Image (cartoon, rainbow, N blue to C red; front, side, top):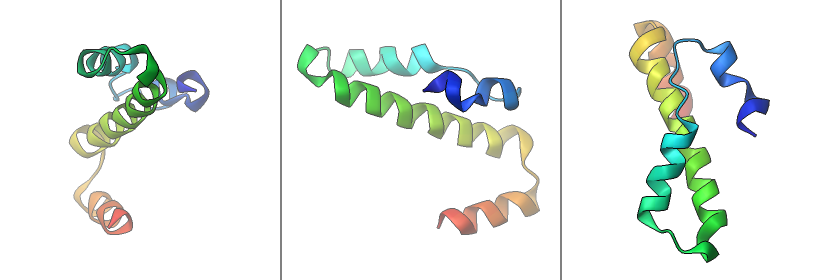
Length: 72
């Protein structure tokens, strides 16, 4: 799913932290029966990290205000 999104290729300024996000979730709960939950939270964390990078590195004030309004 991560390679299919091509975020790392299209957004060069963005951090590619798939494994870091997954390892954080293993630290939270390593029980095998929660593997689906770990995968879902990893996806969410990766997308949040990418949005954070857009805010921090790429977006102008006008673009970020529009984006924030759209998210709200």
